[in-house]
Image 1 (spheres, helix red, strand yellow):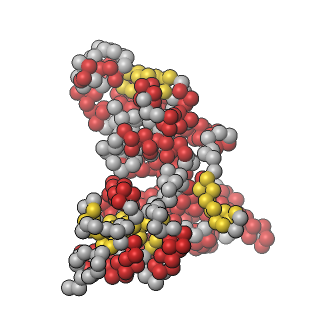
Image 2 (tube, helix red, strand yellow):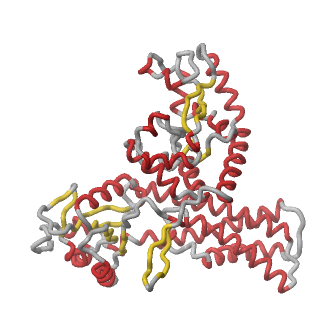
Image 3 (cartoon, one colour):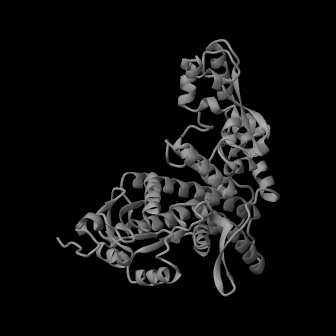
Length: 471
């Protein structure tokens, strides 16, 4: 078996990194996209059939519309570029494009029916498109959940080469290892003037001049380049040109790692493509949308789980003396103090359940142990949302002492309401350090959007994780 022999690349077997090869490793992508197309068409067909059977009104064109709807729906998705691989797998862009395709289809059907004077039932269009959109969003979320499970089991991965200085390579390696659902399997690194055979548990495959040769020899799928003085604009541009002759994708990790999404855009200025960072939108219409979304969803969820709330309240009352609800003081938006509600889970009859932990002499009751295991003790936080003290999604509600001792950056968390769940809850790690959890909170505040909230809520339900702030 051949090996690379270079002044800077150690003797690493080709099979150790290459595996099945780039083409074979990416074969699942085409299958995934084809499955999306078929599932989208099926969702549109089901939506049209349901509306025809159960919907009001009718018309001579309805049977034909049931057949045509899946074709038009897939066409709208294609025009919205929702089958391009760069928008799939991760992030909220895929779901935003589904919503855009829905609006596009309504506009197209309305224009065509008006222009050709077709007798289309308005109820069919008004009901079919929203139902097809909801079904499509649900099935795409399900397929993404399945893909994340496949990646957690070591399938559907892409080999990744890290390029940069030691500290940045180690940080990115740790981040990728903790987020296995993204599918990056780091197989090695290239460091400036490497003097060791391994670093951070990775084989050092070469220096910065060896990147293209390493990618070509090992058939690496992805090259992740981190900020480094040696790779300035010209060198990085040439690296991109050289990688065009391979099958590898080039990823650049910007210095502004905490900023993403709609806040960052590239605009031409002074003849240069400059990266513009917009101010976070925390007021105005977007804030009103978030408040309305929180109140509506919290009200609906409260009504749905009302029998559960009553049953749990009775069980807690019978479990021992003390109030049914525990109240802990936390800081909300703008630093205002509010009482974080939860069902009492300890045998100490106090209102502040946090003061009745085993460290303070309290013990969990059998009922409390069951409630905490299934996150039912956090259900009263829906009342905090209805009272306007919390949001369904947001940063963790901090204690006063936590913020006072955590530095000025973390005061950014107080610009929005704390959440019942949040980005910290679905980060993919159960052992987040205080610094990592705080950094994730600030990232959420900086990049909030309604699409991000929906994505977090969906991942919370999928993972079945415990909501509410960590102890």
